[in-house]
Image (cartoon, rainbow, N blue to C red; front, top):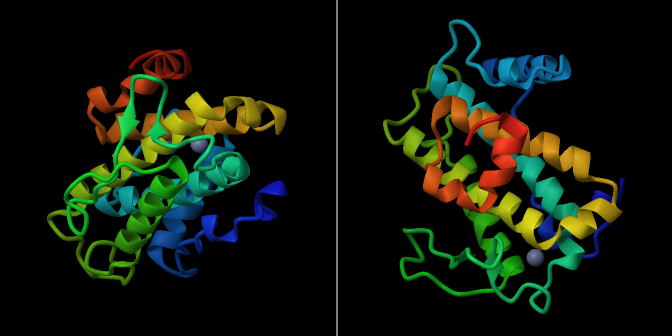
Length: 214
Ligand code: ZN
């Protein structure tokens, strides 16, 4: 597939893998199986008897991997020249700050922003004190807040792709894939109330069209 042959290999982060044989891996399998049934609403619901933090954690990893690949498909068209600022349409511009190392928002190009954003998420996913992968290790109290921040930031990648790179998506024949991925993402966000409505504004019309509500 074309997505693995991009020139800019640093765009492609190492995937976060959920180790086989773990409960989280089983949850991942469950998610894949229900997704395969084609019912996205059912696929996002918390499976019976499961821990909501663990379910959100597993899906966070999955969406991160998906969105990374989607952006990878158009990354060669997203350059400092084509996209000097990170935006989602003319009315929404994003400056990078992570609230930890970068407190004062930095105005930068979209590819630079993507790099900051994906690196920051990778760091959270790799942090065992936030995303414990070992059986019996509890999730921290702050877990859901971190997850919400990750989802809020990942949304901007969809926003940027839809607003600035949809023509490339169409010429690659990837629009059905993008729409399905985004619909799955938004249904998950709605199910667990992960993003403020205000943040979803750049794609409000599309959300209404895909899900029947915003
Ligand atoms: Zn771009």
